[in-house]
Image (cartoon, rainbow over all chains, first blue to last red):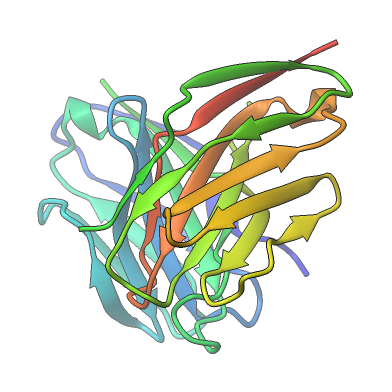
Length: 115
Length: 113
């Protein structure tokens, strides 16, 4: 099975712009979670989608949003970019069928740099 | 609130030796899962090992094993016969019913030849 894929791998944007990141989960997985990784804050949970519905949300401002499509692919959008949004954004997928504690598998991440 | 603490920011070990990475967590939940993930310089997060809290037996995966002490809320990772490819940042993570992974701060492990 192919793993979790994320596109693009690298992005450079300027303050005030918006950005959309994409994640394709492992085939058959219905849950997609997003995490932000920074040197200062570490790994922080953004949100989780299951069957096109947001199931969990972390403590991030409303500028961070996401959605999931019927094929389980997910997108994350950040509007009005700030310098502090520079980070590695990781997507993780899991089946979602065995209960909420089944293993999450991660993609390679998207490195976002905001100038 | 659930927290995960890794008290060793950096560690090093000689190739072929054994090293133990520490992790403690805090939760009032009874049913949960614990994980160790490895993040090499490529930044790809890779699952190393998983432990179900209801299982008393410690999980093992080849050279990787855990010492799970539920009462003490401790979950350490032992790497035997360390290899150069084990060089990475290691994250301890906790998950409960909500499906949200909570990560520790990470331990950078350097395996020296």
